[in-house]
Image (cartoon, rainbow, N blue to C red; front, side, top):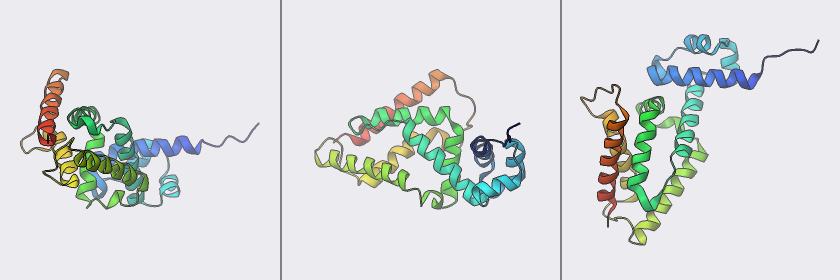
Amino acid sequence: MADMKPDASATRARIVVAARTEFSEHGLAGARVDRIAVSAKASKERLYAYFGDKEALFRAVVEDGFARFLESVPFTVDDLGGYAAREYLHLAANPEEHRLLLWTQLQGGMVVAGADDIHTVIAERRRAMAAAQQDGLISDAFTVDDLFTMIFGITSSWMTAPGSDCGPVDDAEHQRRASIIEGAVRRLCTP
């Protein structure tokens, strides 16, 4: 009979999925490695062998989620309003991703500091926006960094605004919000 070793990549993937849930609910400080291991059906020793420590696991989960977020929402510099609407709909459909982004900010944003691929994608988007400003296609009333930040702020406003109950919202309401976001970002970006 052949030696049957558990599939390491499957175990690692289960750990990441369990950690994503744990970190999105509790953040880095509140998350418990014991709960992640139990949920992943893996030992704490495996978790530490794959990731080193809890902070490294958090970083891996956030970088994976942020990379998936960037890939899932096509960036269109010629339609930043439509991009923002799609970004909102994606975050609304994937609340764990949004919570992880918020926890990352609460940690000081240091988590993705070493994620070169992510920074490359963001830099490309900022260069495209700068070129569009240069060509008069989008407003130059704000710096690219400020515009990029404001677009994300508008996109996530319903999820982070004080008094928001973050309760279930039906598809019609999500579409209404996406339409408002699209219009607001278009007005913001119109030269």
